[in-house]
Length: 334
Image (tube, rainbow, N blue to C red; front, side, top):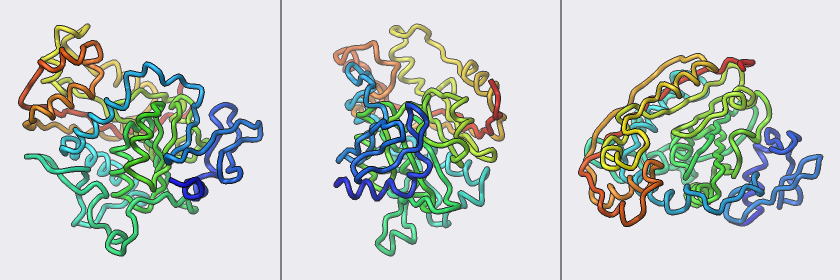
């Protein structure tokens, strides 16, 4: 991507961007970098993103390009399409004026070929009116009143893309501390603003975010409360106890604990936010041998195994079981 195109994409959301080091407002400088009054400078990348954590050491990261390639393969199978659907539905239920229901013909979300029992919509979100007119479904237009969606820990950007396609009039931002993840995301969606950034230092101003999603990733609830508007919502997605149960069963001997419980995660969330609604997404689908290997390579459950060990593990089905939690932050909570 040429830098002028990236600068033009950043311009609408530039007023809400803040320096992750000092909190000063970030401004575009010569169309090549974002700078703050304290002269902290972050260069725009021709690969379509901005690195706001340039000092973070990416060497030795287990969340590497190979892992995100495996995740992309899994997402391409449609396994998580019902999860994306549930997140979109939750946004519509919580904030219908900002995230209205899609046309009846575009009620699903996915990014790939269908599998039996999975919901499927093309990666750009179906046949939106703007697509029919030859315009992209994804936008980043931060005009007054435009809802701002922030995906904290967005990984390769699957959910960011799906939601930006379903709600084409929002401004969408995706950030992750992994440069490999953001590079992958930026290749697949050129109309979303992508940042390498730390979710414990979100690069946006106080009270500017309408909806923040945090899917299967750590959370910093003080930061989430800071950036969310008082009426804004957090969509937190956590594993149910049988999530990827087939993987857990296959590698149980290598895990510190064979069983999984989300109670500590939920208790921590309840200490900082009020739960507005909860939806369980659960389905078990068949997998090919290649898909089974992709699931094995995309989860931290297998970080302790070598590639040779993983090659011998196999299963014929997979269970996706996730809790979609709609929350409102208690501002000022410790």
